[in-house]
Length: 140
Image 1 (cartoon, rainbow, N blue to C red):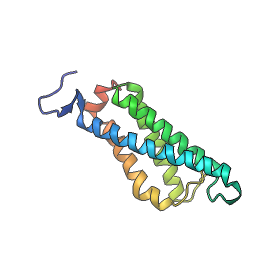
Image 2: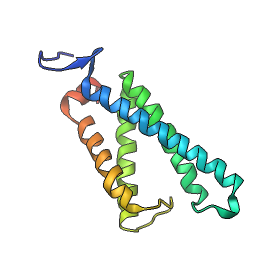
Image 3: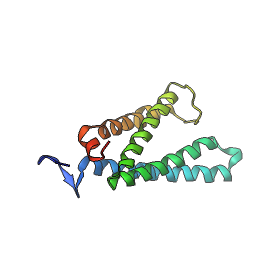
Image 4: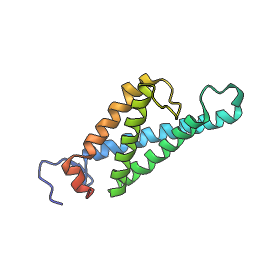
């Protein structure tokens, strides 16, 4: 791949990818820990649980997928880019449905959090990864 002299890189990675993979790792780790805590708490306090089990599993799986694709993205793998785009698109769709209180089968609580944080963040990821120079790096 021919890079122009104005491309800013760190260890042969675009700074956007460094930033994105780092943030995705943190987001994935937080969701994984939170999902695990919800699942363990669900089994400990099932009678008093305020969140359905499906949301706990969803949070754990989302965290694992985000961690996995962040690692692949960091390693420069095409599947990391495609997986991150797919997960971001899924989050945009599911959280938008939650905001409009439509078919919220995952029992996502507090739709305002999704509207303020997750939807714009996922849109930024989606837009960045679909830029020409990033797509050409990952051969998409």
